[in-house]
Length: 471
Image 1 (tube, rainbow, N blue to C red):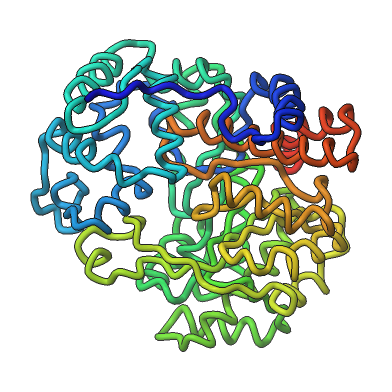
Image 2: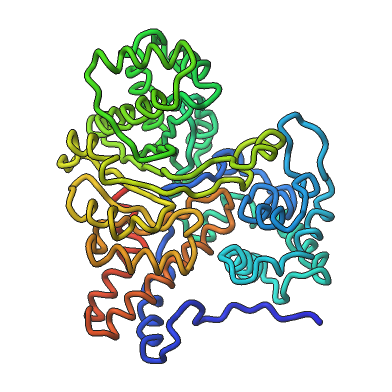
């Protein structure tokens, strides 16, 4: 029997009637604020060339590791979902068949944030009023496919429809930034900026690291044998990214380890890691020193730093070999920040010109380490719940464990950090609802006045992200 799809207006709000009424009032004040999306992984070519999305599968399934990792865990082969292979060998190519495979198993997402985001997209973006399952798969496909053929569902129209004020993509140090140049030349008024992600030339554990450094220095006219030239290459590329609108850098290191080595030691280490195999200890030491160098450069050029540590990337070796990176096989690991960040903080932690935004996948460090650090050092801010914790429960745990020590104003609001373009307004709506629910609880307990909660609701939805990322 076909079931109705409808989004309850009080979803995620407290069950207590009086507290729920407060949450409703708070949410009403922020639900229509513009979206500031200061960190994510949408494709800049979407906005540069404004071409239609190909079909429902290519838009909503193939690029979304949240979707296909769950299906894989239940025995669905990535080949059958049309996920591209490293060697270019054939995978499923019929988008309707891929969509049916997804629809038949949509029940697997019950209770997950993916289900909440997807239902929002189906109901709000496409106006579908029945639930997705095997029986309604073709109905969904036909509606979505027809919509994607209209101008209203081109990337720029969706950007404007969802009141996105600014969105940041993320590019690597070897990216020529051609799409961002094309975007600026197009004359379109939407604000899409980039962010500098230098990991491929910072991480000696990357199998392509030495070759990457050679290319990196070649494209900037610097000598790869010279550590001073290598630093100048970073400064030049950072300037290129700033010209493309970047206000931030991003660092996806295995840990938060930092170091501040004497010049002779880092020059010797640079020579070692760029000419031959590096040990695990040498690789970690080089990454750690370069985080401190990136902080120094951020003070000089004003770019905000983001640090996303603590994940074992591509844990599934077979999936990595066949399909490459970012295919749902990334697993959180334990983190440590107090000792790890001390060398960087000793050098620059008291400098108000530096903003270093910290993220973690280890919730155990929220109250013990991150909130006390951010509640003390002028340079530090806390990023929102990230990746596996970008969920209603994760958002609640974050506020419960960090507010008492870091407060609200040492956090940076919300960012969606996603490749799934249509999920952006859905994710921001969840964050706004959860923050209003948390603030309503504080008002109900007489720990906040409602006028203060109204100010905070706006700050968390809009002001803090815009200020922290200098947007």
